[in-house]
Length: 416
Image 1: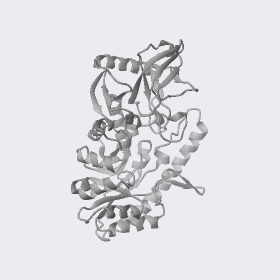
Image 2: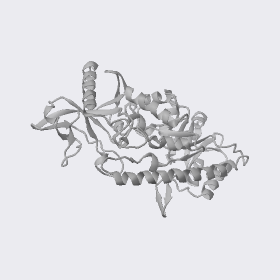
Image 3: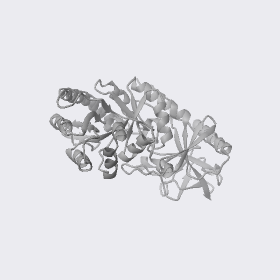
Image 4: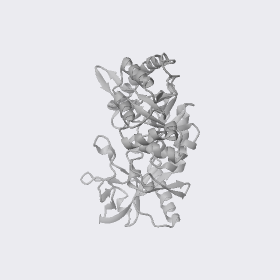
């Protein structure tokens, strides 16, 4: 049975609050809020655990879940990590141009005409970046933006990795490519097109990687999720084997010399993805920072590494403390699990009436009455990467001190 470290106790969360309070005091410079903090000790420990779980399969860093270039570089420097999975082509161009990474795969098809025009005009960028396609229309758009095929464009095919069960499709609504015939047809089209080079395949099993399966007080639902994950993994092993056999048979067709990579998985599915002999690399990002949506997985228990601090600005009553701001709601289906969680000190919670507000967030609970105006309350976001869209810098905590302040994408003047 998988061993799970115990969830952080109230004592551990209060120790974190004291550690952050000491670091803020030692920093000695005024801090604008929200104060975004990444605990490097936890980040490095999470990176090491992800590499352990991958068992030697290289891990591509999901930049969408980081959004701080210095932390992307830190992950790339860790053992077991290689390459970036970007979330837009414009971001990939920036990462390649700034030498953050010379092997960037764009996870989603792009119709950004400006970014595509830049790609096809730059041999250096085109040699470092792989675009994702799942439709001939993606190739047509690239061709419409270039005067010649002198700069070859690296292409990966995104294959639907969802589960087909009981006549239903379970998984993210991503690629239309499921049937083997459609996949090989598009592969042949890429190979036949001058100026394109087929180099990879992606099969992201979001229904395995991105769904909690050990949620407290949801035993029945969690059991169903785990069963669906088992069925997905088994089905994918069979499908990947068939797909790779069909694509291997294309070697020698045109100028195709074989696939360079097969990408799969995410932080929540590293073991099962890496165990598939077809898969040459896995992806991880959220597992480095450990947002609250990754608190309840059977396969792993990462250490929370990212926090944002908000100041207490009001005491409307003896048992309520109100912080400024707070409404950093995560993307996805609307629900309580998308709200930020007041984390340190422990013993605080949002109210049912106001929740996390745009300009103020009232907090109640055992420790609310102990907070004074000016105190910082530290929150965890539900998703990884997204909170950094709301700040220009992140403070890097190591031991008991902040060791560096680094720009987020927003701090670099970027909005992808």
